[in-house]
Structure formats: C-alpha cells, structure tokens
Image 1 (cartoon, one colour):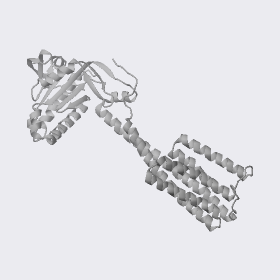
Image 2 (image 1 turned 90 degrees about the vertical axis):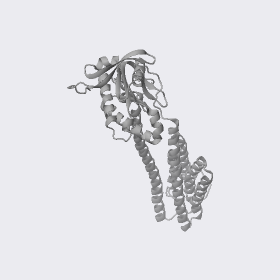
Image 3 (image 1 turned 135 degrees about the vertical axis):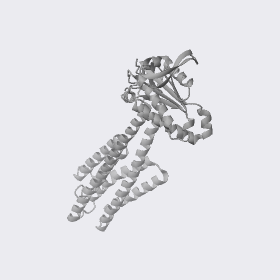
Image 4 (image 1 turned 135 degrees about the horizontal axis):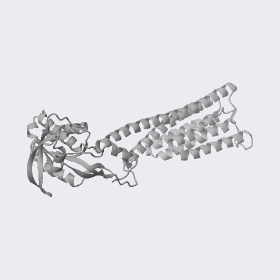
Length: 422
C-alpha cells in the first residue's frame, strides 16, 4: 500500500535561499562599484579632452558626472545604502550623456555621445532585475526621442550649443563613443554570463552533493520518488527480514575507553558493516550508538531476503573476530534476526529518514537484546526460511519481553557445499 499527498519533501531550505541571495547581491554591489569607478574615470578623460579642445561647457558635464559618481561611491561606502547608490548611478548615467549631446548641438556634433545612456538600462537589468530595467529602458527611449526632436528643431533646445569639434576630432569622438559603451556593455554581459555559468556549475556540484547525501540516508528508489515530487511514502511488504546488532557490555566499555576511542571504534566497525551490507544489496536503516539495524527485501523485494541477511550477519561477525584492533577481544556482538510482514516509509519532512516498523521489527530487536555475545539468534519464522541452507542449533524456549515464550535458534554457518545466494 502506498499513500501520496501533495507537497514535496525535498524543498530548498529558506536559509539556503537567503544565503544564495545575499551572495548574489554582494557580487552585484562589488560589480556596480567597479563599473561606476571605470565610467567615472572615463568621464574624467572625456572632460579633459573637451577642455583641451576649448569646449569648456562640454567638458564640465563629464567632469561633473565623474564628481557626482565618486561622491555617490563614497556615500555608499560610508552609509551602506546600496539602493540609493544604485539609483543615483543609473540616473546620472542616463541623463548626463544626453545633456552633453544637447550642449554639443545634437547627435552628429556630439559624435553620438548619448550612446553612453544605454549603459543605464543595461546596468539596471543586471543590478536591479528585469522589472526595473524595463522602466529605465523606456526612460532611455523617451530621452533619445526627445533629443532627436530637439536635434531636428521640432522642440527647442533651450540652450545655445557649444562650438562643434573639428571634423577629425568629431570622428575620433564617434569612435570613442561607439567603442566605450560597447566595451562597458560587453563587460557587463560577460560578467553576467560568467556568473550564470558559475552558478550553474555550483548548482550542478551542490545537486551532486545533495543526491549523494540523500542516498546516504535513503534507498535509491525512494530518493528518486521523492525527487519526482511524491509526498508521504508508506508501503507494506509481505516478506522481509530485519537484523539488529549491538556490542555486549558497551556501556562500561565506552566509559572506560573515553569518547575519542569509542567514536573511532564505532566508526571502524560500522564503516565495515556498511560495506558488507552494500555488497549484499541490503538497506542499512540506522545506527544508534553501538546499535546497527539492517533490513532485507525492502524497498526492493527479494525471495532470498532471510538468506541474504544471515549471510550478512555471518560476515559481520567474521569481520569483528578478525578485526586488528587492540580492543577487538573486548568487542563481542549480539545479532538478532526475524522475518515477516512489515511496513516501511519516509518519516519526517525537514530531517527525514527511511524507517521500518511492525511487530516483526520489534521481535527482531528482542532477538538481539536476548541474544548471546558472538552469536546470531534467529526467530522461528526466520529459522523455517533458512534451515535447509544453514547450520542452526536450537537454543530452546526463552522468555521474550512483551512476547512471552518463544523458540529461538543460533546460526553457526552455512552448510558445506552451499554457496552464498544473491
């Protein structure tokens, strides 16, 4: 049985979104400062050239632009008011080239200096987004139309144009006014493209990391279903086996060894168990301290679920017995196995996990807790499934907490001449 509800479990946390947004805004701020500084320096150059040619009024406009731009940068450095800084830069970049064009007497006489105003909506697209950039572009278009009407004499200029530069100098300014804005726009777009590619590469890297982390806590098939948008996942399995293992006498041992040695010890053992479980194609459910839980036949059913789990248990004990640790002689595992119909699913939404539950799971836990050190204790249900292929010795009837008296068996190994299934 499977139940699905709306609402994906795999959602980008708000903290991640806020962090990514803050990083993007910081990059925008740094680029705006850099581009504003470059354009202010270019304006100084333009102004000095005009002053050198005797066009004092025309030279004053780019010099005033540079002064206002540097003042705006300094004000932002002192106050941190980014939005005001951005608006100021976009506004002066839009208006001052148009003003210089009018002072010089039109499109031709100014060598198309109004092209510099185009960097305003382009900058708005990069620094403020499409919605605000649309407004700035409309303002640029209106400005060009009004300037064109003034240049054609339809509208009065209101100011007396300065003497136009000589023809050779005018041609030079045409080249500079075409190359300058083109270079600025190209660099802004190149930066935007580089950031997009960088963001895409980082996204792919983070996605790979996230998928790997996801597979560390969820079976691959379950992870794929969550990524596909399923909500709650819960299923019943008629045939499965469950294994619990822990270290006998772990509490006094951990108190004696200390936290660092205990962590190192558990890491070595559980890492080896992880490799064994993966090799047999089973699913590790969780670890709690020294406890280790594995399920077979879930989420992918398999007819040999009990055999595969007993083979895994034998290999786990074999590893511990051959483990080259100075504390190996004091590490003695109890392993309990039971089989039956269980339920499995994803629990939680923020810190989710794949878990199994049902009475057979409880019995498997009792098989471990009532077991013997260095032994694998199985229930009667599991014994009936594996008795033809494994050597099992009856332990007899024992009292199981919450279940009463139950018959159990201890597994010694596989019968000779029988290989591992799976």
